[in-house]
Length: 463
Image: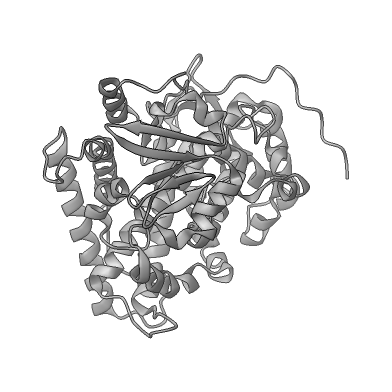
């Protein structure tokens, strides 16, 4: 094995948050929550192992120590439930599905859906993933020289095409642009819901954009219910898309099946979470590779070596180890899901802090991934952090892009395989260059987005 080159000391600074040194005053805190909730975290969250804050007499515990993260998400997982802010933000659109449900209802849906996401099943989706990436590549190749494209939006469309192909391939048409717009319109409202929850305002309280958000929610739920009904009417026997698999799924313990509402809620969960998070991981990866040409060259060289210069085939994807490491490191610096919040169901001791029922416990993933006690040079982009030996030596609960414990993201393998396939297809044939001087602004709307998109010039890579 050849030694990898030493990383240069003058690597460019990447986009990051600038946390406040001290907690924000109440009015400024609420204004910041509405604009960008992740900006409310004080600098202590990036330096300490545990941190307690209070807002309007209500305590919140931030947990950054990996051992305490394990306590909350694994060892005492049954002592916590999804937070009120998550339920109020997402349940109106996603119902009581895998992402939002708790207790017995979550357990049976998870058991029923788990076989769908086994590795051998996901491998069967790889041809559709590669084909969607190839369509995107050809579209980008066809742009006039010097054209700038929003790569965040391009990645959203690519991953949505994959969701449509693998979830809904046998069941009629879906208006991709309108569904995408509906998801964005709905997620834009979530910071207002977060702020109103903190103020203990009733769920019916009006806020700017509420009417647009509710229209988006209604459209999305009605559209997915229509597709489920059409799927049942057309029969699911022998079909391999996720809609059919969910309709046919049974809880292995009880034999219970999902009704139309259950299937629609879970489909919308996978559509929303599945395409949005992977697209953002890819957009941030392309951003980082554009800033670090030596790393980009290693990715391109690996793709060339694994494919032998030919088209990417499904069996190549698992061999692209460094390409996967680049994506994993991008998800460390810019985790698509930047925070988890749980609420205590009973009195629990967390690192010497005795918290009562209802107390929110925040696992600030973005801060943990850049924590001074957990990572050397935490703001540096270095995919070698995820080389097998380095990853093995690190605490499992210092890296949480998909969560952890029994509620770890069910689509983790799907998302990673999809991201590697798309990046490999695009990066070998195309160069991506940032707009000169452009530094993206991080914005949390459940997911961590570049607020202005990701404007990049795209050009064919010279042979």
